[in-house]
Length: 174
Image: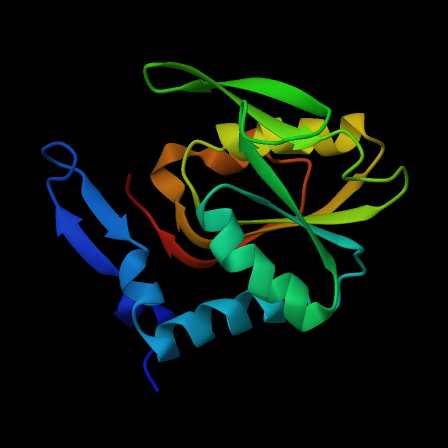
């Protein structure tokens, strides 16, 4: 069987010259690639005690929900501002050219719950850093953060150094 890396399409010079874009959709488009990704995340969690899976829109949903289902855990979505219908808490974080705001339902995490955060990619770490703040604001404990891919050259782990962070694939560049 192929490795997960074999399912990742790499697109040179996108979105700008010198950047290699790592396309996660090519993993999703192949049943074996998708299975490898979900099984890889589940393997990262085999010795972790947790109650809830949290995932940011939209690719965190794609990888987080099947993991939550397979582990018989609940799933909590984190969305862009204005997309959740009930009372929320929010966090602002930096983007390359500005800021963004994400939200989580105020009743999504109960005090003392152990939380795993799942997303497709860690780049600068800003989104996940904001999510850890929301989880902790609600009294949850982040026990593991899992990614399918990591762009190590962008140093996202630095923002998350107090957490247990793991990725299936690590690319050294940006």
